[in-house]
Image 1: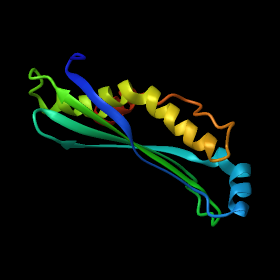
Image 2: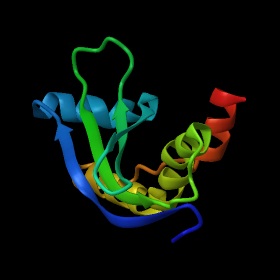
Image 3: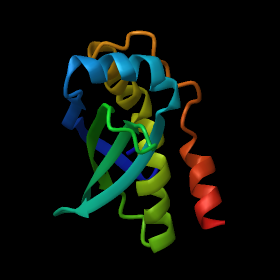
Image 4: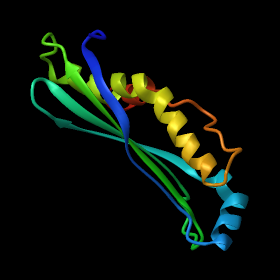
Length: 140
């Protein structure tokens, strides 16, 4: 096991790219630099010390524009937790920090492919998501 957990499977559970019409597409191309990346992580206990961790990335305009596109991916990871993990805080760190850190390169690649294939080939995620930093900010 990778320290306290082992990744058994990871896959794109759902992905969505929504641009209602060509006028919206053109408007978004000119304004996509104002879009923000949002992250959500949730989990579901399975049998035999297994947990499904769903990491969601959304790239969207937070301004109230009528013309906007929407991009979302849900990346699911099934892990088996080591018998050594007994503490709730330790489990929380595995789910919210360790698993997303381990799968992030594949998640980012799939998400960027979605955005690029939706007509925005020059979009890059400027800053890598640091799940350790986000975890520390939230729970320290």
